[in-house]
Length: 159
Length: 159
Image 1 (cartoon, each protein chain N blue to C red):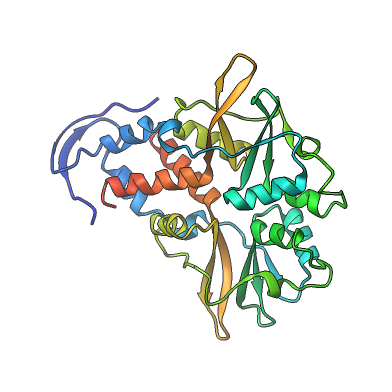
Image 2 (tube, each protein chain N blue to C red):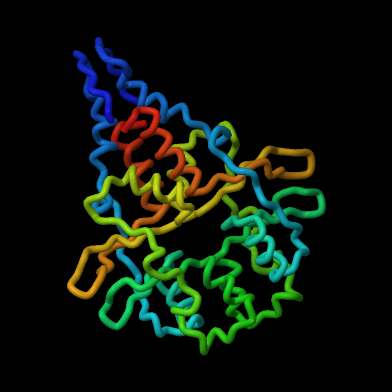
């Protein structure tokens, strides 16, 4: 619960607004474009896609374009030294799969999502919307986005 | 420059203190323990070390224990698909090397370091101290630490 303080102020900034500003930050205002691959893509091609798009996490979808799994650099690096044939193995063998994936909505509080990232040691979450056949991936929220929000909060108050 | 506002308040929290609190956050209060490898370690052993220590970035030191380079998951993943012999190639062939490394001091403002991470697209910085023979690595500051600071700021004000 946010403390409600009443005060009179003089100066160009209302100080309490910083806390309000932080509470008002929503996932949708800070999310990035998601990079999505099909679950039948090979591990090798997924690694190339990750470099091509310069992201740290890929979201894996099924043939209905619904969320099936998540692939991190860590998952791909593990399989690269694991002696598997990266050209043959599809990503759905090595991905973290539903329902073991933490996801969020664009309306969620950025602060709550940041807490989930810290508590569950997650680098990136898919931003999803419920579709007819499953969860559709509409965004990506990462620790880079949270770091950006931290910087934006400071800049808004000329810190 | 931080705006100085004067006000009278009633309530249990002084609102301006949130901005002050953010400015007062120092790298040293949020840094993690650095994971360091010698520049002659093989790429394969470095990948194993990264999993063993569960970090996303390794710092590479020379025989004087001074900062020589940085290795990210991205660097290691690139070399793993690059057709090099990971058992034979030492990390100093593939690392990002001094002087092209952004580093910081434990006395630096966390907000300024967060800005550097965003502006230069860096996931982790070594926290260093000048030693007799070069820079000694005394800490590690990552986007996880910044995300943790964002959460801590919110929790301090019961948001």
